[in-house]
Image 1 (cartoon, rainbow, N blue to C red):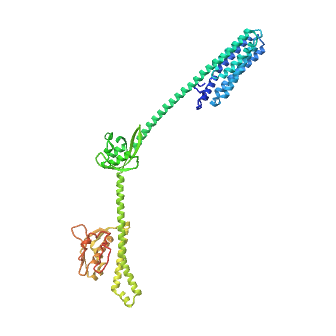
Image 2 (image 1 turned 45 degrees about the horizontal axis):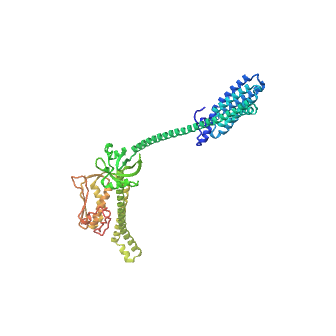
Image 3 (image 1 turned 135 degrees about the horizontal axis):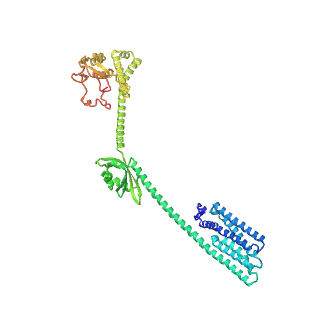
Length: 551
């Protein structure tokens, strides 16, 4: 059997001490019951040997068989108990089974002391009384864990013969009867003492076992807590070292620990940071802010400047968190390098400013163009209304060549504006792809001037092409021609009779095409704004022409 306090039911977890003690007592009595059973069988053999032929053999055999059956039942009950592994709360039936077996055993021995000896042989009776007394004494030592079992064995085994002897009328037998009763009372008293010792021992054993278990549990919990703390510290260290942010642990304003990312960010070595004051790393302008963060329970981020090893100011984002480490109040500070974020914010701000400026200029440009488009449209609409609603004189005026030329010029100006807008849109969207080739500058200048010859003749303006025939340039002829046409058109607007417009290309330089005129030129006060779209510098031409500024 298992030697643990609870034996085969030790796996039961119960806080009821009385139940546990009761279960252990049942286990003890079952573990020692085979001693008394074996002694009973041995005593039966002795009785058979001594009494064989002295009394009726049939009566002796019947008694011996009954005792043997009872002993066998006791053995079987012990085996079943050892295999049952009963729970604590199921021990009561096993107790009653054991008490029943001991009572039957005691009753058989009590019957034997009264009815087995020959009527005229006191020696045989005394022998059986002594034998029963020995078995009763043995039961005291064996069954003391369950005191009821001693009563169940000793009283049935000894009381009948004591009663017979007391009632015999013989002084000696009466005395022997009383002695027998005193012996039984002595056994009962002794069994009570032994039972008290056994119960106290078991209780102390449980208390000691609980104490040992509690100590083992405490040691185990302490060991587990220590292992957990070590693992937690290792995990924190690994996480801190793997973090992209710098981490500083502060106690009383001094740095007691940090991670590798902080060293990489600031450029300091571990020896240089160890024991350093936190404020030694902070630009003085931010000392007051950091002091407030260290004393307040605020975990929101703040932006400050740190002093790096090379003396530069590093923009960082700082978060402060309070913690408790080994009974000391500490501050854990996370430091994030925000240089790239600052660059991105600056780029976004500049892009936003440029976008807002571009939107403003676009709105102004559209407003200016819309205003310039209205004039030629109004001229055309006025002529059409004169033709439809005017009288004969008005219609005749509308049909005059100079009126029609004025309307045609307005329409031509509107077409030019639309073409310029379309070209500008195509340039911005990348739909105009330059197709460069070698061209003769003189031929392109002749083509450009020929397109304005009728207007120049009407205004008395002379057009000159001064470019040498051998002058070549590698460019897109259409785009360069458009630029030249815009410049010549602007020159014609502001030149008057006897003025000259020339296209030339100075020698001994890279290819430069110059369009010049002898007209009034651009006034000094508007010359500085000639390339600004947000400034309306359009003026009237020499013939009353309007424009949209520098095309």
